[in-house]
Amino acid sequence: MTKTIPVAGLACLLALGTAQAECPRAEPPPAKARPDKPAFPAKPPCLDAKGGCPGWEAYSYNDAIKAYNAQIAVYRPLAEAYVKALNAYVKAASDYAQCEVKALQ
Image (cartoon, rainbow, N blue to C red):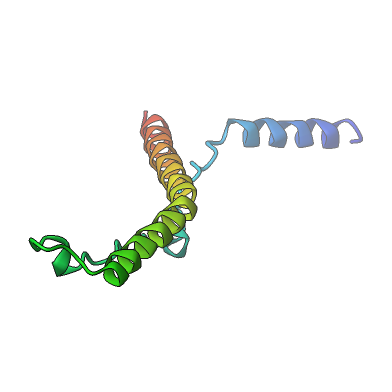
């Protein structure tokens, strides 16, 4: 009787080992992780005018462009990280689909 319990336990373990494991599901990155792209500053109409802009307006626009460039420098790595997460999600979704196909065979 002492020999039948280990043998029965081993048989159960072998049966569980042959059972198909569930395919891991792909999880998309959270939508709140998507960074917001900064808005490009509006171009003043006087920039295209023949006489150009008065100094203060040109300087203001130049300052707005500098601020935009600083915001874009912060945005770019966040956007690249989000794209990387999206690509990982696409790969995981493909892996999941392949796993499901193999489970059907």
